[in-house]
Length: 457
Ligand code: GDP
Image (cartoon, rainbow, N blue to C red; front, top):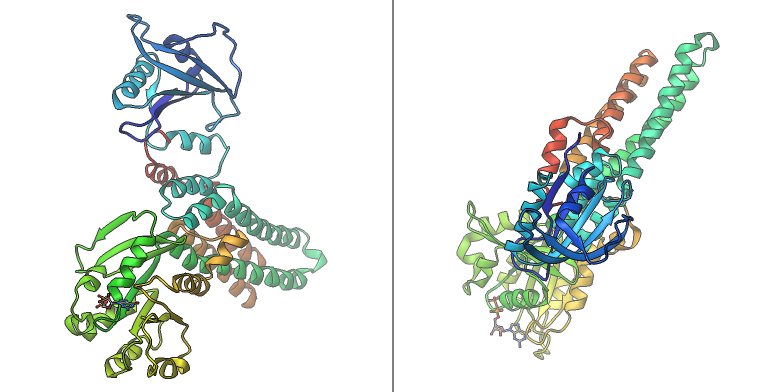
C-alpha cells in the first residue's frame, strides 16, 4: 500500500501557528489515534475543522491544543485523504506532533512529496508543479503573478494547443499513407507546410518570451554610471529606501562586484556593482574604462546620471559614448538647483534615449523613472495581459528542441522526402513538449524537480 506521509509544513522557528500535514490512506486512522476532539462526533467530512487536543496514546500526555482540518479524497492538495494539524507554533511542539504521527503509522515525507503526489495523481501537471516552486521562491509581485499564471495551467494550455496542431498534421499524413490511391500527397504537403510554419512561429514566440521571463525572475541587471558627485549614491540610496524588502545581498565572490536585488515599485531590479558606487571616488576613472565597459556590456539597463547644475564637459561626453548602443536611461539630477546656463538638455536631445529629470536629494521625479523602466521592458503588458511567459530554463530548452524538430520536418517537405518521415519529426517534437507538462518525462527529471521543493510542500 502506498505510504501515508507526514511533515511539518510551516517554516522552522517560532511562529503563531505551525502546521503538520498528513496525506495518504491511513491519514484518518492515524489522526484518530493521536487526536481527541472536543466534540465526540466521529464523522469525517471534507473541508471541516475539529477542535481538540493532540494526546500521546501510550501515556495520555497532552502535547498541544490544536485544530485539525480534514480533506477527503479526491478533494485535497494531493487528491488523497489529508489532514492538517494546526498547532501552536514552536519547534518542540511541532516536532513532537510529527513524531507521534510517525510512531503511529506515517512515514516522513520527502521534500516536495505532497506536490509530487498531486502530480502523480494527475491533479496538476509538471509545469504547474514548477509554478508552485516559483511562487514560493518569488521575490517580487510580478514574479509571483507569473508563477500563479503558470500554476493555473496557462502554459500547459498553450503547449496543449500546439500539440493539437502537431497531431492534426500527423493525422492528415496518416490518411495520405493509408489511402495512396487518392493521390492527395501534394495537397497534404502544402497544408502541412503551412501548419508547420505556424507551429514554428508559436514555438519561437514562446522561446523569445524567456527573455522577458528571465527579467521577471532574475531582475533587470542594472548599472548606474556617472561622474563623481553626479548623484549615484544618492540615487542608489533612494532606490534602496523605496524597496520594501531587500531580499538578498549577493556578494560576488569570483568578481569584485556586489549585486543587490531590489523590488522597486514592483519592478525586479538587480543592481550591479553597488560597492563601486558607494566608493566616493570616480568609479570610471578608478576601475578603468575597460572594466566599466564590461559592466555596461553585461547589463540589461544602464542608468546614466548627470549633474545638471554643472556644465556639460568632456567626462560627460565620455559617458555618453559608453552607453551609445545600449539600453539606457539618461537621468538629469539636481533639478532642485536652479542653473539657467545648463546646456545638458540641448546636448542630449538628439540621443534617442529617454531623459528623466530628478532630484535624488529631494526625491522628485522617481515615478517617471519607474514608469520609463516599465515601458522599456514592457512590464505593464505582462501584468495586464496575462501573457504566457517562459520563466524556466528547462521549459525553454524543450521548446528549442521541439522547434528544431519542426524545422527538420519543414526541410523534409521542402526536399520532397516521403511524408512518413515528416511524421517522425513531428512525433519527436511532440515528445519534446510532453516533457514540459510531464506527459512523458523520465523519473530522474521528476525527482530532480521535486527535490527543489521545501520539506512539507
Ligand atoms: P556620487 O559621487 O555620484 O555618488 O554622488 P553623491 O550621491 O555622493 O552626491 C554628490 C553630492 O551631490 C552630495 O553632496 C549630494 O548630497 C549632492 N546631491 C545629490 N543629488 C542631489 C540633488 O538632487 N540635489 C542637490 N541639491 N544635491 C544633490
